[in-house]
Image (cartoon, rainbow, N blue to C red; front, side, top):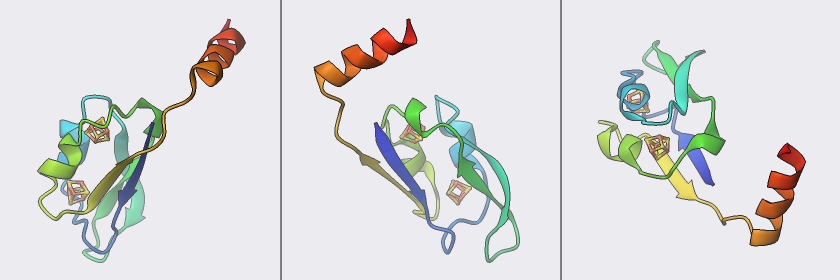
Length: 84
Ligand code: SF4
Ligand code: SF4
């Protein structure tokens, strides 16, 4: 699990993050940044594998990925049970 933040004061809307993410976590949004370009938005945070490719490739250091605590085995078992 991860928490992903995009700093709207740094992001210039180049969409490198959208292109490098192997899990399609980002998509373009209608929200404009201070440059007047459209920012990316996080559409599937739960799909993030915390590879940090987006953090490394963002030319403006606008992305921060924080790995959050993993679920306990009991919580994961409950989730699987509910899916079936
Ligand atoms: S790579 Fe960085 S600057 Fe480019 S759109 Fe993504 S967050 Fe914004
Ligand atoms: S850390 Fe990896 S999987 Fe997660 S949003 Fe960034 S590029 Fe995508």
